Image 1 (cartoon, one colour):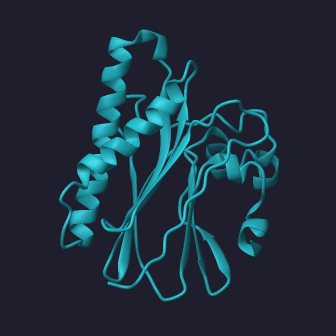
Image 2 (cartoon, rainbow, N blue to C red):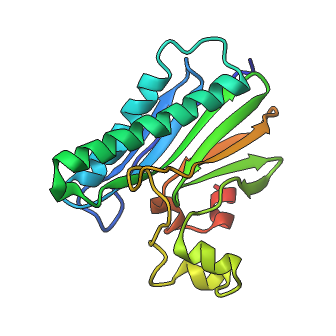
Length: 207
């Protein structure tokens, strides 16, 4: 297994009183995640915590990492989190709009598997080139795909925060699974829209 260095940081930003994002780094299990909660009355913070707890549960006793096992544990994490949030909402109707976007990447010998849902993102930097590995599940991204908006117009659009998929919103969870190889010098960045709303991809690459 290649040696991988992990680092995580969270910041409340300029406009919010409470941070509903969460990150988790588990080097021994070879995974890390970012979840961005949504919903009022502390619901978003709780939703993102449910996701992190689900990952710890799914990866309990995780040994001999492989692509297949990584995929299974990612799917299990998202399924557990989805069930936890939906069950919580049934018992606490005042949290009915809670949920979270999420990125969960798992490394194994020579490769990675990434689970993605929502408008949080995962980037990779390889030989100085930045590549967004995920596609936002958002209204403005859908309009970009259909030629209604340009990426420049979408960046400041009034509906840019409307997401089309999230954990905990409905029973059938449409999860993106992305697989790839890792090479020496690769950098991976998992982040919420709190970062990408503030700075563009070029600045991310230069940083």
